[in-house]
Length: 231
Image (cartoon, rainbow, N blue to C red; front, side, top):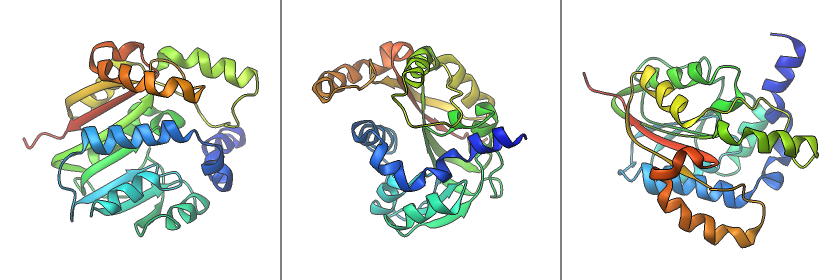
């Protein structure tokens, strides 16, 4: 890996102290809802859950609040220090491309807007599947490749402060990656019909999200719930 590539992969570690202040909170809260209120409605109490690419810890916090035994993984100590401010999870430095856990270790794996920030999203999904126990559930969200032009435009206009990888995947590629990892797709949906640029659009976006299973390939974000077969 070149120095430039390494800097891109570690961007969010350097950005950790600013991350919460810069993120779009509507987007964050909507992704938490999709993961925990739509995909993971199970009783998480006492279950081993990996927050793969935990960022500053919002998804770890929700899982801890629901009684899960949470492991928060991200690329550096600065990010994990932010996690520690929000919840009492086990914190591990590592990459989703090479998870430092044995096979079939977790009951649940959560990974929201992470795989696109790696050099190889397919490998990242394969790793998520590897550490999931048979019968376990993975919940993944990722930006839709169809909308990548919007990010290119935003970056050109210097409207976004982010400099990491942006390897977005399409609806069909996400399904293929999940199935290639040996997981069964339980449900796949889209959310956010348009980029969430103004608060006035949020109620409309939420209503249209109800159509996410039908028009998902057209939407800005994609989410999938998948189960690892028991045999």
